[in-house]
Image: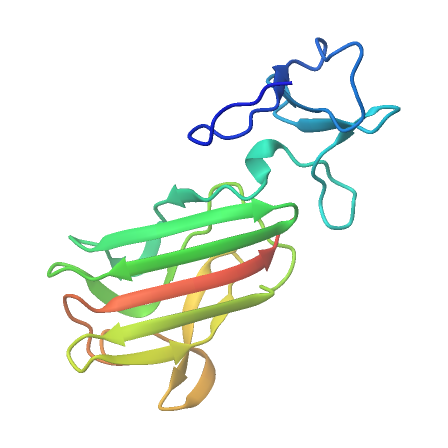
Length: 194
């Protein structure tokens, strides 16, 4: 068993899938460096410590609650000197995205701007939940928008204009307001992944 101080936290036993402890005790946890799995001895066998909600997929330690930063590819939006702050986490077959883009003086928004999902993500279904908010810093006012997904698995920033949602109506250089430096696009989504 490997215990350490509060600064470094609890560390499970580290081994490979072929060098697991030969006389484990019930509840012993190991990390396999060759597979990336956390395993626990259940008294009879090495079980996987984490599985998808439906129990069909074993999860690697890297799949469990670790947020990863990524830079999305934008379409119909010129990043210029704007700043992206996007991250994602996958837990089983559910993915979470949080993102914020702040326009710079050389950024611009065109009709139906959208961005890419994290590399390797494909979706068999519509998102479980998604939102997009736009901040007009000139008047310090937020505009809440809904999202929809296109066939290329990209999030479209579409939604409410003057309180009315029109599918297919998205951003433009003047919708939902005239975009300028310092304006913000905030995005959040929960998606079911294949």
